[in-house]
Image (cartoon, rainbow, N blue to C red; front, side, top):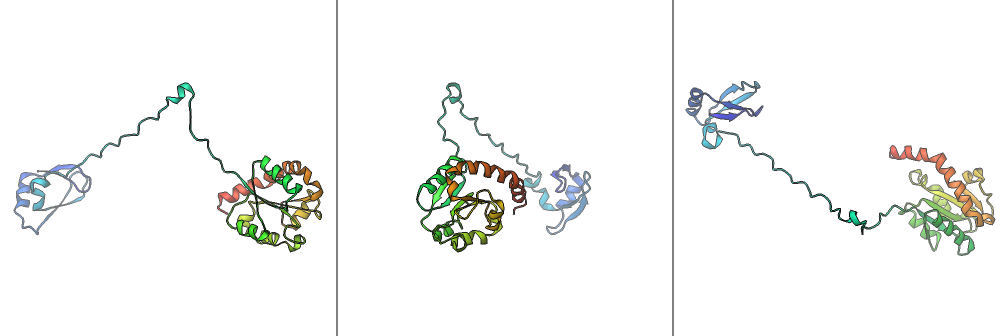
Length: 229
């Protein structure tokens, strides 16, 4: 009788004398022995001698058919009608009253690859920024307020948790600010301050400010992302 060891799964041949002894055992009795190949314990019982138990069924795994190679017939004539890849577009929130200054800011942001969004009130902006990950926010100090110190949206930005705030390039515009004055920007928890008289040069200002910001804080941001913070 040939059967498989339950431990090493090697095929073993049970001598006829032992097979006869096992066959004569009562149904509830067993004989303990060891596998001569691996030394593992084997329990012999009459059920092992049934015709269907002579061999341990071994089913070979069904081969998985690989998918067919891609159709590259378009390669010969250069024809390709696939959809263009869509990359993530950084979002910018603009809080400036309608006028030339707002037009200039939007034109500059879109020229740098941002998608600019407008809102109708500071309250709407506060609600949106809770659910949208803006890469840039531009606020005029007189937007829906009498000044930066009473601006509700600015208060929200100052109170924002750093896990979100650190990824927003926050720009303040107003007559009280001095362009590129980093100490003033720090005092107002902003990344850049711009005097409203210099908004016509907003494109030049951002082309200088953003690379400097990324050079300074880019490695820090990457390290924080790596640590999930």
